[in-house]
Image (cartoon, rainbow, N blue to C red; front, side):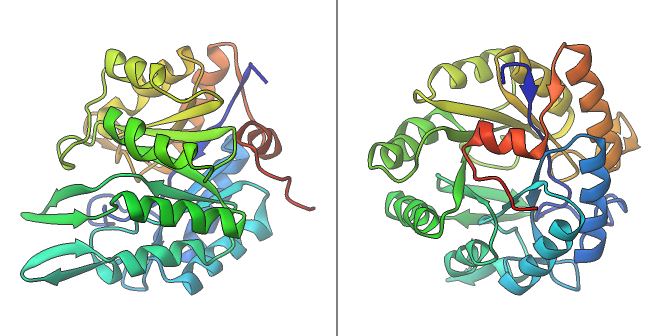
Length: 295
């Protein structure tokens, strides 16, 4: 499927709010409806984050199940639930005055029957609203997440913020047999302004990280903010896949807020202008190494 490109839609995330962009879907019904519109426009994977009724972040499996059920009733898009959660709500507590994303809450992201889950193979400090928030995913926790996903039949999406994340924990988990090829790696670039240890997007940075991938890996690029469009084009030039959505980028152009549908529509137009075709959900499953969803 050399001419097929997976377009992932990341509609919500666990950080931005409707105060920043009123088009962000946060509740199960509006998330599912937004995803369905994006699916019809050419998206074949959805990266789902859950929110509480007050729009704060959560990995509550009941809310995830509600979102996943509503999406699946509408379409066969590949569902990928987050085990990162977010930076507020149920996800953060303070121990000794230091905010931390709660490990036990993150694990709940695996309990809602998704085909894929994100696996952040890194320990980072996220700086938001004047706070430094620890997300601790040490080597043992990486292995635990990978083993837990394998036991549940969940395909990990390895979220990689820098070359060290790829060469250390991702590689060691793969070498330990905790994932089967093809390995699906998501390069998260442009988060360096808020995430300590993350890399900016440049063509050279992305090219280097692609060169460092393990054999039998396929890759996707999630670029934060204004680099989303350029990074998507560069990803396709290097043989990879693309992600768009309000989780990563609130704007369509300078000064104009976006909605998820128009971000997908624009990327699909570019995919086709470059001589490719957007993958269907079942084609995406074949590329990623997932089983087909029953009709």
